[in-house]
Amino acid sequence: MDYTTRKSLVYKTKVEYGDYTINHIEGCSHGCNYPCYAMLMAKRFGRIKNYEEWITPKLVSNTLELLDSELPKLKDKIDNIHLCFMTDPFMHGESEIIEMSIKAIKK
Ligand code: SF4
Image 1 (cartoon, rainbow, N blue to C red):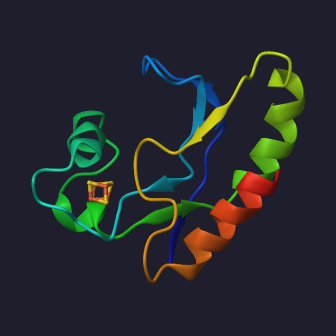
Image 2: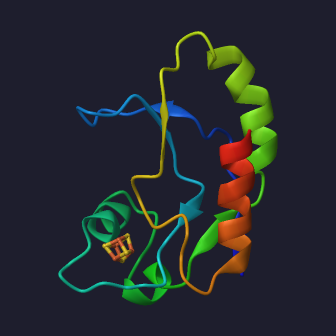
């Protein structure tokens, strides 16, 4: 598993049916080719360079620490949190990602 870290995680989404969201994984090993909207956005915003990078997911290793610091500050504003718009949080065969998603849901 590859890892990355973030300075913040919980943010207000501009998606019309969404409220807040977290994206605690970059990339998706499913690698759908129709093409994947999330991959196109990741390329557009410079988070990945190519398809090979996309299909090698990176887990945000400080996910739980960020939730611990951000959720108390936002709790009066948050109606719900989407998990997540940019990948599959229960990616088949990626046990660390699945475990982290479950821990994030518990928080
Ligand atoms: S994010 Fe969804 S559409 Fe994109 S590669 Fe993963 S499963 Fe496929």
